[in-house]
Amino acid sequence: MSDISSVVRALGGYWKNGQGQAPCPICQPEQRPDQNALSFNIKEGKLLLHCFKSGCEFTDLLDVLQFSEPETCENLKPRWCEVGAPSFTASDNVKRARAIWRNARPIKGTLAESYLRNRGITCDLPSSLRFMPNLFHAPSAQHLPAMVANVQPVGGLHRTFLNGQGGRLVCSAKMMLGSCAGGAVRLSDGRDKLVVCEGIETGLSLMSGMLSGSSVVWSCLSTSGMKSLRLPQGFRKLVIATDGDPAGGNAGQVLMRRAMALGWEVSILPAPCGKDWNDVLMLRGGAQ
Image 1 (spheres, rainbow, N blue to C red):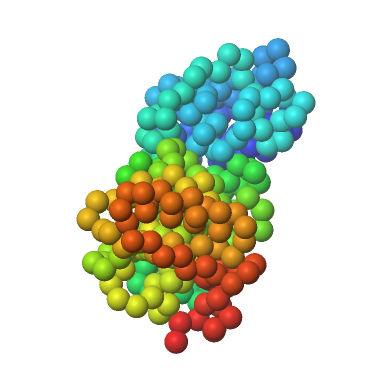
Image 2: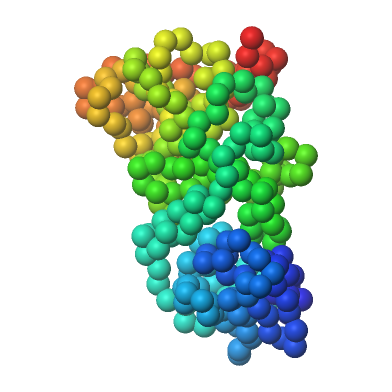
């Protein structure tokens, strides 16, 4: 069961004689050396987890650590399995996301800010973005630095995992936690119009000298997020900044039709084919 032991050690715990203890990633996010509430046991070829501090549910742990549905231990790395996993609710997942958000620090002066500046972004960074220096990344079973984003009004969390040099991970860099459907990362305040896009970096690029007037900029995080976006009250002009690919264009059209049916004045701002607006900013050498 060396694969399980590597996960336990990645959490800052220990593994001995087929059993392990580690800090619970839900109720012990500080991961101090004296924290070891989460126990690991093997029974009938399956992994059992128990949090002795708060009784955190196994499926909540799955969601926090972004593991897939329970599987057999033969397919473990880095996935986990458990006998009779209880059901979990969306509200539980939001609580886990909120715990991470509360423990995150302001983004200014962090590796997350360096990551964004290295992508040509020069605008002021919003309070909806924070930094976690040591967040568990399930696909690699490592603790890694991450930019975390508050998804409003639904209470979810978006994570962008980084390497130690201020770059984004090549594999499984972006993950969501909790309820994100219909929500957005709110990047700026404004008066004139609402501008929506997919990626956080895309929205910040638009804010780095690529928009005129006073705009509210929201990142929908994905094409599905764009299609399901909850449109706010108080604005009648909507600009949809789409990525330059078929999926992005389709998502923009879906949102446009829905917004127009609600009485919005809508325009599409498509990125060049095969690119997004951060690509455009980078090609320009950053904001001028």
